[in-house]
Length: 142
Image 1 (tube, one colour):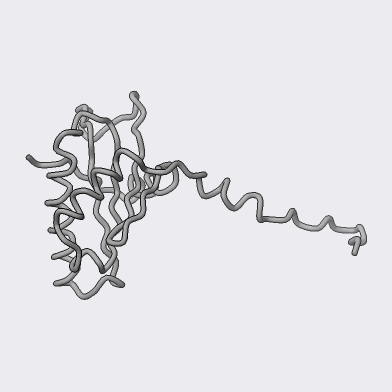
Image 2 (cartoon, helix red, strand yellow):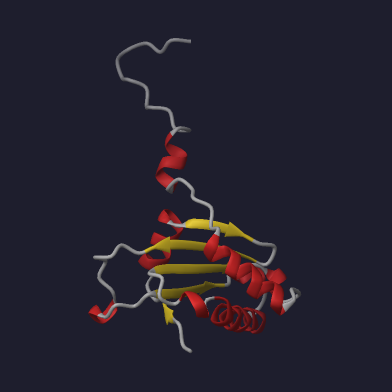
């Protein structure tokens, strides 16, 4: 079975901004439910799409590719029963993926799809921390 992939940066950012998160010691999963009228590539109805990210912090190119291969295979096994669900899944790898047991990765990915925690979009999360700019021409009150 071949999973559909996320290929464009805006798809990854949409999952990061509007998705639900699940953290594991080996990875962080971001799950975003797709809108029913959302256009997909080629106009075909693709249910579940997978995106993998392994930054240079996780290791050199050989380690990053090995991490991606392990996560892709774990995702195939964990998400096999959920391919009809219309969602985008982004997995952000950590370096602990190489040391983790494969069955643990599969179990954590299954849990990530079922129980991804809801969170605020980034703009809303930081909106309450920002102060409005001071008004010009009026003395500030101390």
